[in-house]
Amino acid sequence: YKAAEVDSWGADEDAHLQTACDVEFSLAYGGKLLLHNTRLFLKCGRRYGICGKNGVGKTTLMRNIANGKIEGLDPELCAIYVESHADDEGEEGELAVNKWIFQRPELEERGRHDATEADQLLRSVGFNDELLNAPVNSLSGGW
Image (cartoon, rainbow, N blue to C red; front, side, top):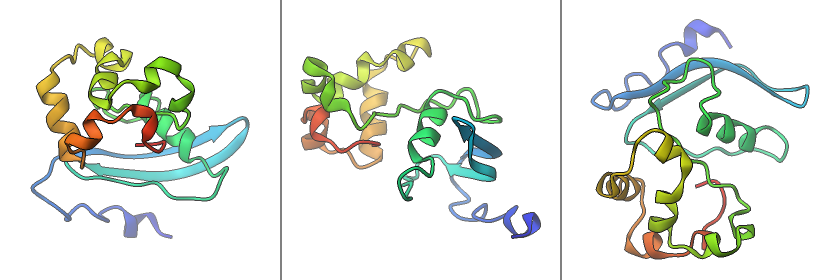
C-alpha cells in the first residue's frame, strides 16, 4: 500500500468525535517483528476489536497499549487490558467488574478514582447492569 492513500483513512468518519490516537509504530516480541510501520487510529467513544490468528501480536499489542508503550500514544490515554487469564486470579477474579476495575493500579497511578466516570465509560462501551455486576472471571479475555 502507499502511505499517502492511508494517511486520511477514517479521519472523516465520526468527525465530531475526538481522536484518541493517530500513530504509526512498529511492534516486536521476542525478536519477532509483529507489526511494522502500522497505523493505529482510534476515536474516543468508539469500540474496537482486534482479530487475528494466534501468534500475530493481538495480546502484545493490547499489553503495549495498556502500558503506554506505543511510541506517540498520548500518555493521558488510560487503557486497561484484562488478561484472558483473569479466572486464575483466585478471589480477585470473583469480584464484580465494577468493583474489580477500581482496584486497578493503572487508575490509581493516574489519579482516576471517580466511580461515576468509570461507570459511565464502561456503559458507553456496552456494559449494562448485568455485566457490571458479573464476576470478572465470567467475561472472555481482552475486553
